[in-house]
Image 1: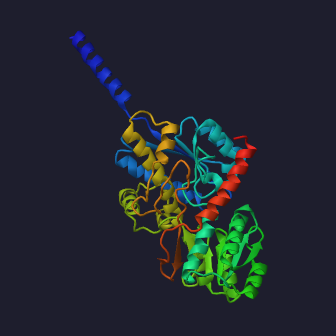
Image 2: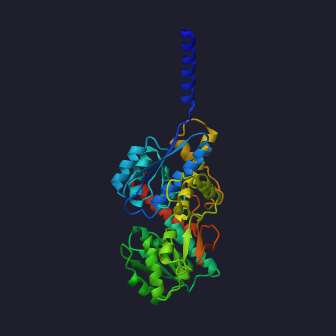
Image 3: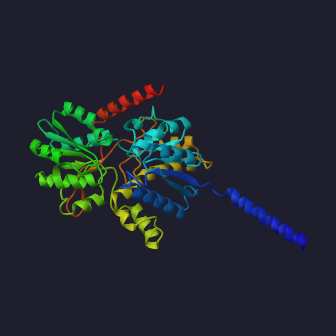
Length: 414
């Protein structure tokens, strides 16, 4: 009897060992984010979206049978803390995402030296889309140069294909983020013959009165605004105070529903924004998250944020990342390496996550995926799409990219 029990226990132990050894290794994705200082207007929604997306996939068996783990840590927008976070997670995570320009710039040389896949969506170095130089860095979206070019391109189409004689005002926070599109705007001025005037305003962006007084005298046909968060609220109020119609104002992508509500739904009528993703709750992925998680009390944050464009931005950043991991594991079930992840990202072709984002084609040379955006206008009750997804003046944008990436390569001895 004892011998038989011993055999049964031994068989059970072997079965448990076999089950444990066959269990799929978790796929870890690291989000080293600023959750406490400068980027708090977006990071909570993005992190919430990524955790929800992972939870939904895990309910459906993970990625090719591998459960997903999202590692979230705070770097407070401090480069040194960002480096420390990167060093902590780089050995366990497939990708590392910093969502901060100063932190991304600080970590980038280390990630390239270590051969780790670094995600740099919508922040960081604009020239990092150049895969020839930045082999391990994946912006997965348009640069600010590309966004500015696309806004001008959209305006040209509205103007009947001719910008000669038109007046364009570039309104911006006088800070590297706001200053970045200026070289491209000046190059487009030379090409298209429009009149360009620059209107900076100081940090923190609450005093724009001087800039708007000058804009009123300039009487532009288009105002391109490079700001974020409460800066949009101030701009809308100053436009009204100076008698400038809001439908002449187009903002960079950092304009969300919180900003809209702070302006006022009716007061914001006519304002436009450049977008890199579909917003709202109509997309099938968002509906699935609401049904499978939030309706069952399993969401990873406040339900009200799910309708925010920053939430869908988080989904859009990670949809191609999760898809690349799926493709890599579908082809080879062995442990996913950084090299395989890199190659799989570069295999994405016209990937749009079912219409969530513009078609993304990532190659060894273009890590941005094509740089497409579109324009939306607020009609008082909803966002109305004014243009198709597209990328304009790509030769100008890539000339700027190559100039900067060549300088980086030279400075680092590549």
